Image (cartoon, rainbow, N blue to C red; front, side):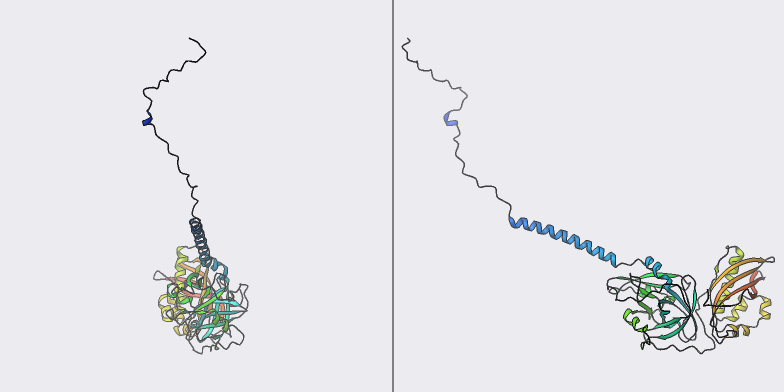
Length: 398
């Protein structure tokens, strides 16, 4: 019946699968959560500090490497830069070895080892390119340094003394000649950690300069023998080159009748084609010069002279003529065949001798140009005669 009232709605049907009230989870309100924690300030500082230290260490390591590299020395570069001023010192003496290295430090002054020039009769210096000049001794120091004055002039640049001592950690180089006349440069370590000189030395290197990276002299090797050699420091060298130095004692000239130069073997440079005849001639004339320098006049007759020359040239004549001579810088400039198996050989060389020697006329050093006739005796090449091609010239002219 419709009396205007709404009929009650039927109850809502709940699916059988729906959970009952007892099965429902009651949600509990969550407590307020604190905001996210910011990183610890000290931790951030520590991490940054560690990074800074790593960068600093890397920079310091790189700086050390750069400094270590800057203190190293390139021996070949130093050699090329200063070799015009590093010279061979050769002499005929009564007591000295007659052979050393020296360094031209300017104003015609040369520093070398006095063991080479004790009681000299004549002294010469030879540059790396073969220029020869005479020299006079000014004096020697108590630690074995000799000061020479060159006679004449050279266009070669000197190697000046350094104005300050080298860095104790800086690598240094020794420049010196071998007995064969070759100029070499070898590291000798540092002032703080020196290398044993015995590992780089020979007798001809006595008097050799110690060169710093700047290309200046910071020391000099001196001593009577290799075993007693040592480096004379820069501050000592400065004392020896001042005018009227009281640190050097004048070197007395030799008064002996027979002096000698270096005793090492000689072999002339062969400036012609190396034919069998030229090589054989070179060997014979090398033996000739070696025996002359050693004053072995009996050996000359046995090993070098022809039968005819032995009969025509008494041993005493050789002795009187060459008892103060020393021959060096020999060069064979011409070799031609003579007859069937002989040879004509032209050789130039330099000779040192006493100013009182026979025919010296007050000179002490000459350049000679001689043509030799070589013949066969018993199948061996022998020296038969020699004649000058040109007159002897003073060593002071090129």
